[in-house]
Image (cartoon, rainbow, N blue to C red; front, side):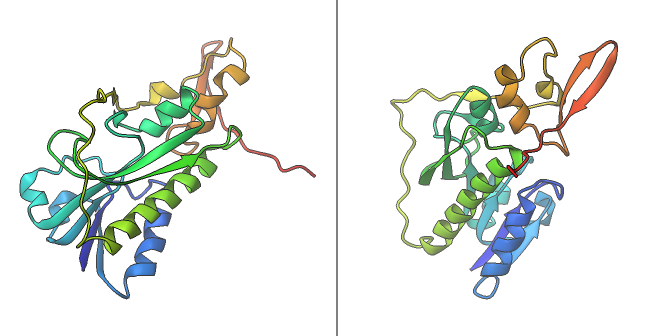
Length: 215
């Protein structure tokens, strides 16, 4: 198969998983990693993984199927960074959905869902490891079942919900509240790209969190 993966940012932490996935599968498939939709040349399968561009019908028509891996139990949690919002709100696990791309955001037919447990102590990198492992498994499933899959429509009986795109301000802490009450937010903040921070005494302070192993 001719497969293209479109991942917009070279700095996104998912890239390590994508590199490993390509290395593991490139003996049996022709695989390209693209950063912009202008690089899409066509083929059998297009994966949109952490893609920030809108991929319209002309781009999708270059491929037999265009699939998205989305970290929510669709139709709930459409939109941006759903697992981050859900963990902040106290979720102890997340569902990762493999679905077909459509013009309406995250509305396509479902190929498969996986549920993963998020331990209450897991930090940003540990959460990513769990999430990216599930994403790789779903990508494998897509390739293995490409010619036999019968996707399912998203449930019309469940009201769709949407999350907004996160910005730098969403990583702000309240210095007057306890650490425990804000731990969900602290642990999901990307320490490299969107670190947790707080304002105090007219200054901005960055907060990073590291788990210390027991001696």
